[in-house]
Amino acid sequence: MKIKTNIQNLKNYKIQLRVEQAVHEFMKKKGYLKLDLPVMSPALIPESYLEIFETEFNYFDRKEKLYLTPSPELFMKRLLTQGIGNIYYLGKSFRNSEPNSSFHSPEFTMLEFYKVGATYLELAEQILEMMRFVSDKTPRSRSFVNKKLNNSIFYQGKKISFDKWEKFTVAEAFEKFAGIKEKELFNNKLFIKKVKEKGYKTKGFSYQDIFSQIIAQEIEPKLGINGYPAMLYDYPKEMSSLAKLSKDEKTAKRVEFYINGIEIGGCCEELNDWREQETRNKKQETKRKEYKMIDHKVDKGFIEALKYGLPDCTGAGIGFDRLCMVFANATSIDKLKLINIV
Image 1: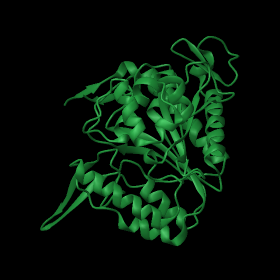
Image 2: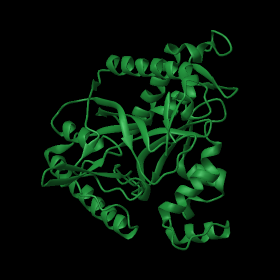
Image 3: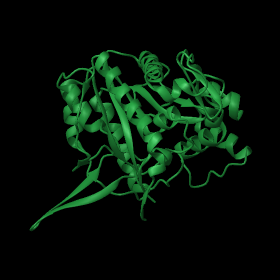
Image 4: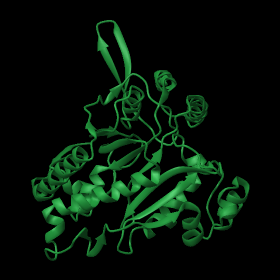
């Protein structure tokens, strides 16, 4: 890898700063407390669907493994159990074993926030409100074609209005865009049979692997392309290790949202049953070992914190680089950066 300077991206970088300023202003207006958090931790929540970066602290004979945090969740939920109230973090997160692309970098900026007492659908509406606020505060988005866009931006020649969501449940999206019916989606055997008929390889792949592949190839490119951002909600429980389950016990209270086929972020009602969370963590830990992923220390203190009582809340995570890319009308997150590691 090498270091590359990109002074030609200065205009887009300044737009990113405007978006950042608008987000801070919105969060303050809504009563969220801004947090400054570590980006290294001696232990992590086990998650089998993402890999992490490992490093080491050395001081004379003392050596200790540390890990770059893939999200600030393990810190933020500790604070929530102590009654801190609505909080947000805007800073760096890290995920390994994923290739650089137009929409992803191993080091990225995450906007994560938690609202106490809100449902996942209520917080989704506040996310939409935030995007309206940002569009109003970002000159580039308002002056691309004219000065009367009103809650809208232009991205790659398309007008995107933040007046409402285009909504699909996951079951509706799988049937509409991939031809997989609800009864097949929520039955592992029927699901595997159907995807085999569609030509997908299934040997050696888990339900989660295949689900993610179909989402990426057949569904995501069709979301948020009709003039509004799209929200996809009510995910299978297998795809939601940290979310509360719905009454049907098949789906979880989770939302993801998209603009022009690009996943920007999502939210979910946070699981606050420490026993259930401990059970899920053990399953995720086992899967990490099966997949021969980095064997990091598991954050047992996270479960201890949940025992104090995590309030009913919904948490959101937004890929801030992607959000800024859209508001800057850029084709890649690299177009925002003054320095790249390539």
